Image 1 (cartoon, rainbow, N blue to C red):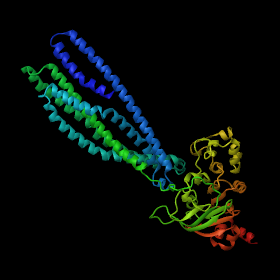
Image 2 (image 1 turned 45 degrees about the vertical axis):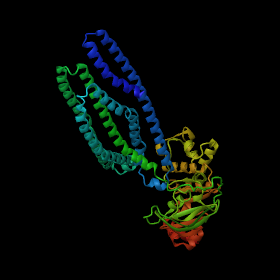
Image 3 (image 1 turned 120 degrees about the vertical axis):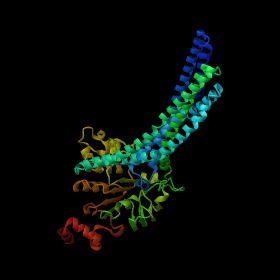
Image 4 (image 1 turned 120 degrees about the horizontal axis):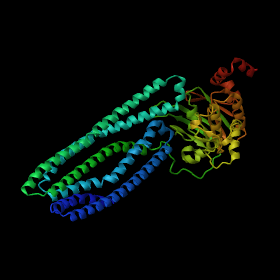
Length: 557
């Protein structure tokens, strides 16, 4: 279709020449009509070819962009926590949206113009030379000047486009942070500050976009200037040749058409080069994300066909978030037997969350090993491991949809009764039943239509729903009252999984089979409540700070 369109374009000036030289010059209006009708027919054929070419170019570009966006999204899903720690959310959003859009647009232009523009340019030069070799000297003068200018423009624009994408990252990051934390912003009356911060990032992006537009705007006027200069030269020089009888008027008209086609093709090529320059900056950013290797990967010989019982052991485990960072866990060793409840207690920053994150392999240990049923978790496929390790994270994130969708997120095939059973264990059923639509009640973005305690209970229900062999509750009852927390603890005792409860409340750990006391990344004590009250000054100090000296005396009595 594209070749058909180009052929029609190259034939048009020849038809004009024939109409002028053979029809108009000899007053043969019948020939003018026939050749004119033929021109219209060719133009219609070129139109059909152009429409078909554009349609398939758009189809290929949109399909390619959709595939790339899907690949990028899948890549983000495959990244480990350690990888995601290094990428700002705004940066990922930009790469999945704006950068892919740049790629789509340039693919469409490439498919439409990569063949058309160069062939039309070369074809116009050849046809113009065949029409009048003497007039073709115009191309020899104009082309090098214009090409040199366009190369200079492209080289100037590439670094500017890279800066534009980087500043777009910053705008998206500021916007995402502000929208996520808008309640904090309002609570501290920091809206003016956030507006100013966004304005700074937005102005920086605007400045770079204006610079890119200013440089790009030089292209078309420059081409038109060269075109007009060329037309004037052709008319002046060609007119002298016509007066001398060495050239026909039709050939001058045809040559001007070919000159226009050649320079317009060169302009299309230059615009394509500019778009390529912009898309190259986006392509490098896309490639950078696609080339990221997950820091946590399945071992080639990982055992996929295995069942998990729930015995967890830490063997002299040390862990740090980066090679240059100080370790957050050092020499941690303990064993949790199947069905036991292990409470993890310690001050903020003592490494509690880091410890439980090693069980489902959100991160890999720096040294030592974590085993599940005697096998290193690094030898268990992540899908198998996380299928049997339920977790309620510190942040009780809920997805938009319904309550049922959120509870059954890890096991969509659950029956309604199974969903209700998980909710009852998490003490969520009572408040869910007060809602008009019960478990079909809508959940707004991030669960904004529920209180913190309600979100936590729904998150616990979601963790319980797949009936995991190991259950991790990472400070997931901090927003519920003591009575509800006690009911949740009692309900969990009736369930079989090995339970890890991260908490800062003494009330939430006293009934645990074993309590781990962390201090500055080290396991300073472990045992039951009574054992630790007798033998751990750190635990006793925490207990006294929460319960008071009177309670301690009563316990001692």
